Length: 144
Image (cartoon, rainbow, N blue to C red; front, side, top):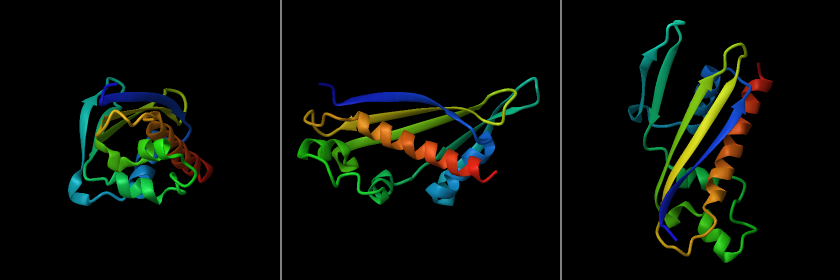
């Protein structure tokens, strides 16, 4: 079994794209010196594609703050779900506005590298982070 790989999942968001990105930044609380945003492309419609890059977000600390993700796990599951068992966890979320509606779609991609081939359930990490993003979206949408 390979030690590295990636997963990608696409999901709809109901909140306006800009508010979703702002909401995520409020929750993630990255260090200001590790956040950058730049306009990647100006479209003929006048809309801009903007890339937001955040470095230094501590996924291990964030993961432990979730509602006890390891509490009811077997030993194998606990290994798979513990970020410390990975030498690399890098995620990219791309949020795309859908014409005619406020929301859009998000594409969440996670690259990983495990420390051992004994770690089996790597899908858990993308599943739990997708739920996290959907909850952020729901909170923002319900407050509009």
